[in-house]
Length: 353
Image 1 (cartoon, rainbow, N blue to C red):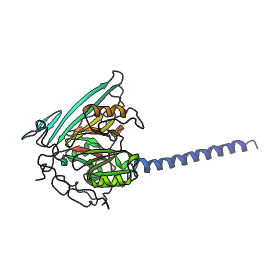
Image 2: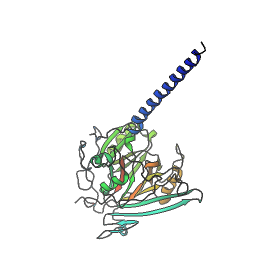
Image 3: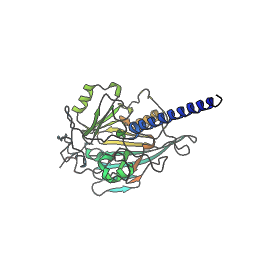
Image 4: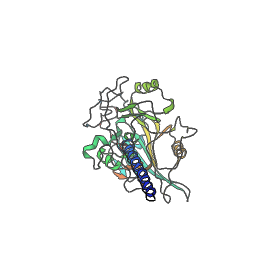
């Protein structure tokens, strides 16, 4: 009788441990499929309204991949002076490319890089600004790791090092995107005029770059089906889903749903042809703490942006310039990403000739 109590207790402990092990296995399997394993992105032909995939030389179609291509239609043409309407002539060259450690200028593209140190001695903040002027929208591109899966040096075909992806695309400046393959619902992904995902209702704010070079953001909780249809009617060139929106009509939202200090990446819009990428380093107490969304939005506002939008941050947030790291992430090997935004030389002149 005296031995039966310890034996029963041992069986109970063994049962509890086995149950805990089973729960742990289930949680890991769930985490793998929900957070780690990415669904294969596939471009989809839309019913109505139809997205624009340019067959004109003004905005080239995406690079060929093994995935099926969406139907192509004609994109609106730009005028002879390009997106900028002939303004900012001093930002461009009239001939050869001029390049320094912090700038790039050609007849069609101008990029000015700057590093800004802010914050306090105890809580320093370092961020990088790429101010961008382009005459032709074909200079503003996005790239998916999936499109380059055969050249991927990593073990997963849907994600890739931002640096490797920027090298493969020949980008001048690049920034990590919205990492859309980490989510399976509540998003729209349109890249270079091709829709890869359209799974509504939206879970996050979206940012839309139209073929006329304008940019707008839309709040997830304010975007109905008819509004999404109207967005497609205006011919989106890019749609990102992450957020939150940081500026609308030059104003910062009253509050953000979360506001912790982190590494951040985002895009700003001044006017058609004039944009900026901003990357905030963070989680490095002696170098840069990072920013919260309120601080990040204020940076864009102080620069004079009309619209600004937050992209994927944390360990994914990085920037490259001329094939090299420009930002300094906390890890020597930043987290791989599914996509990037980048600037390159246009394939043709701004008038599409």
